[in-house]
Structure formats: C-alpha cells, structure tokens
Length: 342
Image 1: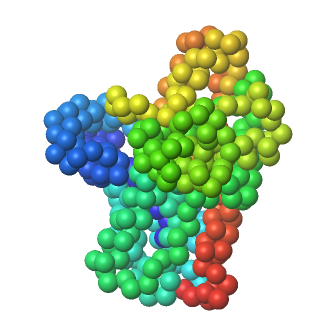
Image 2: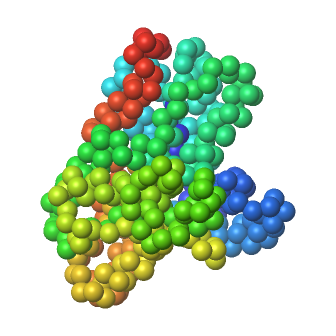
C-alpha cells in the first residue's frame, strides 16, 4: 500500500477548497487548539487561498491531470509489474482521491494476508508519515483489521533511494553544468521539530545540531534532510562548498526551519553564482512544490537576482531505478517467510 500526500481533483477553486479543508483540518498539519484551527481555516485560509492555489495548479496541470497523481499511479503500476503476482499494489492519498480507505478496500478485496504500508516520504515528519500512520490505524479499526501492517518508513539514507536520487541528478547535468547544487526540502514549523526532540534540550540549540545523525536527533526531520543531502552529495563526488541545503513551502507567519529556499537563492546570486541546479529530495513525485514553486517561482527569483542559469532536477517519479528501490523496500519489509503471500 503506497501512500502519498494527495492533490485536488481539479485545478479549480472549489476542488482546491475541498482539498485544503481536508488537509488543513488535520491537527498534525496545523498543530494548534481545535477552536483556533477552525477559526483560522474557515475565517481566513479557505476564504483567500483556494483561488491563488487553483491558479498555481493550473500552471502545472497536464492532459493527464495532476502530476502528483499520475506519477504516483505510474509508480504503482510499475511496482506491480516488478513485484509480480505474489503482491497486490494499491495506491492511496492521505488527502483527496484515491483515498487511503479505497486502497485498504482494494487489498481486502483480493484477500491479502499481510499489508506492507509504505508512506512515500523519505524523511519522517509527524505531519506526513505520522499522520499517515494515524489514519491507517483509524481505518484498521473501522475495517476490523487485526494484523498490524509492516511499515516502511524513514528511508532517508537507504542506499537504493540515494543511488536513484544521484542518478537523476547526473542525468539532468547533461542539460548543462551548474556552479552550485541546492537541496531544497519541504519546510516545517520550528515548533514541530522541537516537539519531536525526546530530550527537549537538543533541537535547534546549536547551528550544527543537525549536521550528523545521532541517538539524540535520529528522529529529527531536519537532521534526516541533511543526512539525505550528504548521502547524495557523496555519491556525486561533490565538494562541501559546491552544495547546500534549504527549506521551502513556508506557510503562515510562525517561524519555520531555516534557511529558506528563497533566501538561499538570493544569497547565491549575491555571491556571484551564475548557475544553480535545484533538487527536491523530500518529494519522490513531481508536484506543485517542485513544478510551480521551484521550477517556475525559484527560477524567476534567481534570474531576477542576477543569476544566469537555473536547472530543476525532476523528481524520482517512476524511474526504473526508483521502482526497483521501492520493490526492495517492500520485499525487505515483507520478510522472506512471507514472500509467497499475495
């Protein structure tokens, strides 16, 4: 059972409003008291944001529809072909359609004996993986699923994921050389990071607190992002001064983890960097954040600040290396003793 975040059904204001209402009603996404969340959502966000977001979605919509949806569907289809008849593959979105519930029902209809649950988020965050696991638990209770799923999570330094990520960057380098490689990950509010610190004393205390994974920060989203970037940069043979990490998609006025991608692009242009290549390793499928925010908005920002060339690396989507990486993750989770189960 593959799970990705989701997408509106259409690039229209009504469809976007319905999607945002479901997405932002999740307390793991907007972590605040329910009355405040309801007032913010219905009093401001759903009144102002759907029209702007719909316009952004229209700029990336294709004849096949939402890129996130069809890339996720392509991955599911390719994974089914690789895994063969011993497995049934179902795709569900945490928000929107196809829903996670429809994916569970599909698997129950073919009488699976075990479910391998694979949230398609390389790095762990409570608002993505945590929310997905919580929703699965709710569905398990609703559908009387007695056996717990075998969960694949936090594959941020899985060798096959890192190899596939490096390969797509190498392919994109054929479009032109860049002076700097910027890893742009989805951002999170600082409060989310601090809430995940088991010690309550380590998170964001020192500038280099996320530089290496340790027993203290092993569940930290930001530390996992830096570990992913390090792993990919090593595979590319990149020197430390030729790449950096930033965080995008900030929402609202609360402090989010820094540096922000827009600030990083401004700084690179100010330093005289003429060409930059941006890769987004927290997204395994191209979506609004990679295609509109980075490929369109990031490109315009960098050129406006004096940069000359801007390259956006495609997401893994359904590349063969990524399909086989996912197949390995699934088989490893299923365990050899269960390999014959449908």
